[in-house]
Image 1 (cartoon, rainbow, N blue to C red):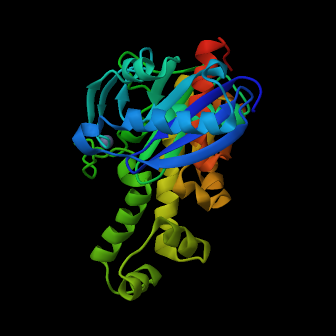
Image 2: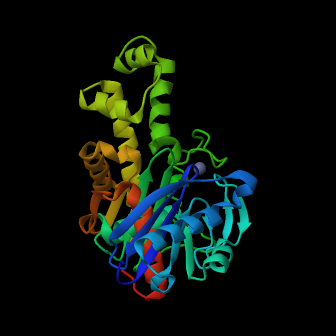
Image 3: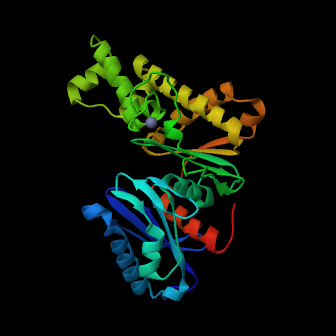
Length: 326
Ligand SMILES: [Zn+2]
């Protein structure tokens, strides 16, 4: 039997739900995934999660009395105080009182937060953040996500929208974004945005260059390809990387003036470019930020990868039940 108190950390995504049984020290005892059943507006997901958690608790010999609670991160607009979900488009939830539903079937405390906010909690607890009080985290994936910790707490704002970094307007009259507006950071600095920049260049000048040759040969291009070509000295790839990292550095400098963070954490698929990405963002950040803002701030690549969500969800429970903060 696993001794001590345990937390179920849950990271709900559009395809799979990641679940972990995690100690109050942030050590993963067990982790697994189940499919996200989006049928009937997603009403079965919570029952599926709890049935799966219950089974694993049983197998680990952990009685329910040793479970501090369940923490969940979900994609969408969520009230950070109550966990009420206004809308989670990818899942199909709208005006859904998830905590009430899960509390009723589990009998344990339940806490819910936006998945990007949960990820920053995880990174700051057990990853690259090192339990700092003021942190900005940016996830460069298919989209651009973000979360802010200010004075040791997740910054939620008046209706849960604080830290939606991907939708800061960077280009007036820019490209159309998924949010319906245009020129958002996401249209430039997401993996999708980086590829779009390259495809627009190829459309405008098909005459020469490695990017053109690559698309002619393979039909597609990824953000990783663009970073690889930049590392090899391909001029157009370099200019796309330079523009993207310059925009990110500028945006972080502006956010830095508001938040004054001691850490900025960059995660998501694009962050696999490592120092090739980070050094350029830092250079641009130093150029645009006030000296006292940039000198105190360390920029790092996120470390927890796919575990950030479940670990952060566990911290959410620890924070609320045991009244701890960074
Ligand atoms: Zn947008």
